Image (cartoon, rainbow, N blue to C red; front, side):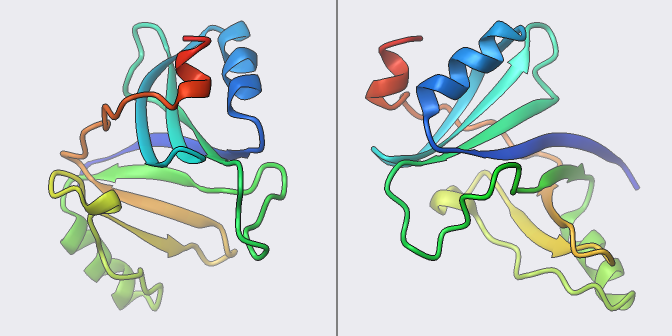
Amino acid sequence: MGVRIAHVSVRAKDGPASVRFYRALGFEICSCLQYSPTEYFLQMSVKGQPNVTIEIQVNESPAPEYDRSPGTGHFALNVTDLAATAQRLAELGLTPDSPRHPGGREDAYICFVFDPDGNKIELNDDAYPLPQDPLPAAIAAIA
């Protein structure tokens, strides 16, 4: 079984402020998945290390039930065989949700599972490519 840490996810209220902060630490934008002009995920990595990223989830106009708690989110693991991994976890009583294609992308396949302590973990099929959607206008202005 092959596995590696893919990313750590954090939630942000202000995308441009988060980009500036992580840039000050040496990160750069390497990927964007845009759901709408006000909801998008940015992947930021340290130059030369594109396989380990911080995923910044920005939702500027969330529904009332959206959890905006600082630091909430998840971490992600790339696994060699998502279906086999999900089956092994189910056999342990840790039932992952149904694998799906995020944003309707056929090239990406993921599911989520909670570990025994309630931590949310994203499992990515190892072939998961980083999406390359256009940057939202507020981010493109500072990119």
